[in-house]
Image 1: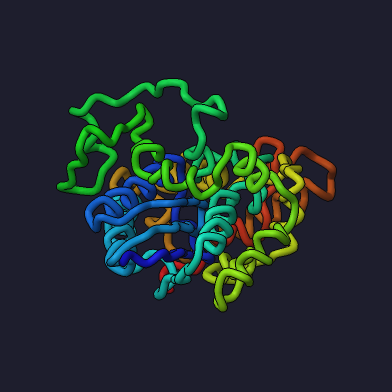
Image 2 (image 1 turned 120 degrees about the horizontal axis):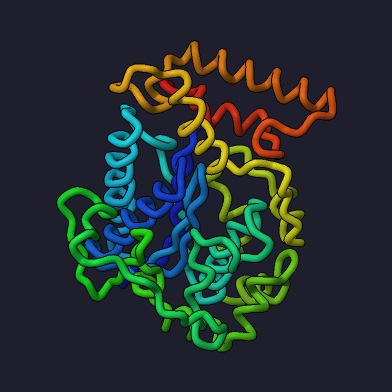
Length: 327
């Protein structure tokens, strides 16, 4: 019988997904791994430094290996990087029981909300929150599809995916084709129940109680789901449940795009060197110090923040400039 498992791969001190294209490729690599291991995908959430997935599989370890290996090859090739991407070990949590499974889906689908990237789970595009009850929730606008002849550009090398798994013009394999939405809808029973779980504040006492009555395994909570993410701050995530997005703070993706498209071309004049990883670590540290000083001066002089009116935190600058690479 298939095991239901939650998998989390984290990079923490180095951004794993530097652009929207990277997030798309990350999901596509995961989708290919799910299909090739005959697993069932139930939920996913991809963020700049980590991803969460929930699958039913006879081979969860192989699924993670294939997904991680394919994406690492893509990332290292694109950014002229070498070595392992992400923490040495991934986090796996075995899920037993329907209520435990529902709680896990809730937390994975609410990643964008919990990390302050969206006002609701449905507003974050790189998660599976919009897969269930699409018709009832008015999300059935037909997507514009990419011609079959171009699909290879957005897939791992030497991989083909049957055309029944559609790909939109951005290169994303559609989540509604990859995930088992019918199974998820049976779990939640109704669109209203699903909406409540996606929009509630705090832990759902009913679901926690049901988990305790279901079996002896510990309830799935936000802290449990995020166990694979170093320095996780539950207070930050719970505050973000109110949906008040801090629009004055730049996102990792926005900061990486500024670095990759504005800063790097200004620093590197050699056409053969064109990514942040082509800049020496000592030079990256100097850039970090200069940007930090510039931000402080602007704040002291009450000038507009450096990044189109937004500011970057110290931790963001360090991971987006890859200061810990090479380890």
